[in-house]
Length: 289
Image (cartoon, rainbow, N blue to C red; front, side):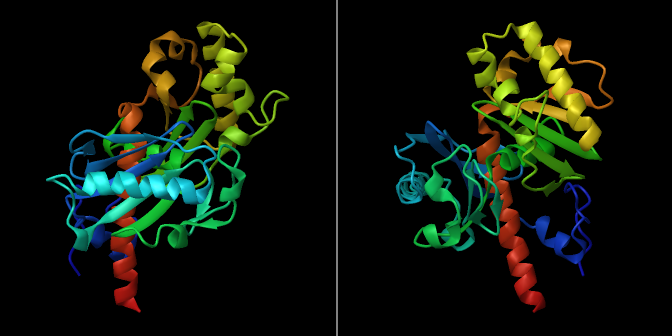
């Protein structure tokens, strides 16, 4: 058995299967499904960057699985028409959605159309080219940040906290994703879910000054630390662009707290990486049977 490449994050975490993770294709495609827009891009898996510009189409309303699948197909057609698109025989497509996802089945719909509940995306996207894999959108962003961004080459447990319309969380230990943490749905200071008080949307709705918002976020992260201690919190979402306005108030935690680096491309990058790895792992498991 070829020894895994030690330069690859979490190179030995999956035992013999890890050798396949050091042999990923150069590129994959990531698609990030959001409430207002669905965006996709060609992901350079060596660098964690996009090859060419990302492509965005407004999210259809209502955002039913069938309507979103049609838009995903349009985005995929556009990306595959580009000169540096992945070859079809090694095409892996990752789709990030705002919900709990287990085995490509969507099991929650708190920030997505209710018709997504129990939707099997393998069946939904079966007519698209390549192999498709679906994951939670915060998990996609967290995986990207852990491998290529603010958590790159750092051992231990990292938690990504995305602050937007809601609050998403992602846990990555030594480069390996622990999916579907959903800690934005905890009760916090008498409010449930917590995102009603600490999301970027909540800050605007409550007209909360930046310094007060920073202190509220500090209390929330301390609350999380008691439940799930980590080495580092990475703060993402569009609000991370203004981290200097509120992160100085986030002090007194054992874990480091830093802003995300990949900004709005994190979900696309993480989805592409996840799909490429899941495709390799599926091949490995099939060869072992």
